Length: 147
Length: 251
Image: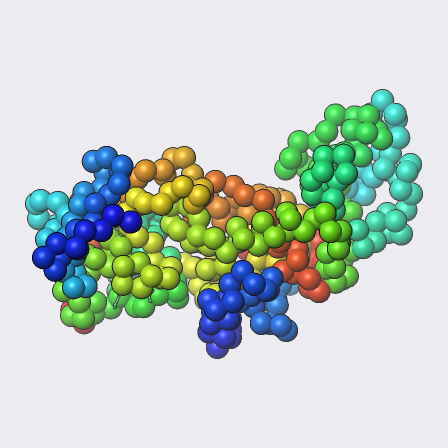
């Protein structure tokens, strides 16, 4: 893992992942700056959260999303997460939960590392699970969940 | 069900890789049948409604049918399957001296076809191979799984155990993350079972047909976005003592 301690910030670079995963700075338990420019689209974020093939969020999490009977019970309910956590805190949790909980089952959505020996299927190799834009939209939506 | 899983989780994290059944406490091993709805359980329990029985019946016919250049049926060598095949599925996979590798029941059936019947091998997941495998495995229904003790299997089994506990695929989940640590919880709409291969080949409602353990494993590996691996021996060891159900039904 390529981490550089810089003036109290952790700068994580993505080794050899090309343009797909950009670098970002971790401050405490948050990523303060958005991964990409532009404004997040909460409606698209809401649709992504419920996308069981792409984001997979509701396979583990429940929350104020459609089809409650298809929500998993492997992870905390996301109701009110926007009141508990700031946008930057949510961002780090989606980007790389393993930094906070090393043995978590939550996938690191914006990380391409240590693929050797992990038998990643060819179609998914060298790609983050979600893009910076996806994570921007998901963050914009989750911060609206105030209670 | 929910009350049970925390015990398992703590165990697995602590002793991962040391004990074969790490994560599932002794006496807590449960077949996938226990996690199904009463409706699906009833479908499996009644031979008249269990769709897998169609494959068993087809297998019974194939067992009697002469095949290949040797023009001999399975029954020609093995006679009455209810006598000669009883208990075979409960102890498979076995070590195949010819290839120096483990061989599963379907593989053994195909090697008999090639060598004794001198016929073309049956394609993986073909109805005929599933039918014969289901028929043979059905002869062990109700018997406890007692894996072969052949020492030559040990390295393959150990490798399987290691892989079962390794984080794999783009999602970086191990089989154990779900099946040792979080069984009984729900992944989306599905209850996570303990992944015991008790009823293969089995009828899966999602497939609307019978399929092999290999096919079922591919589903979970595609789920974590990993390349396929061979875990049959380890899974059978984990399931020691559970009863054979073939043909089982699963959601």
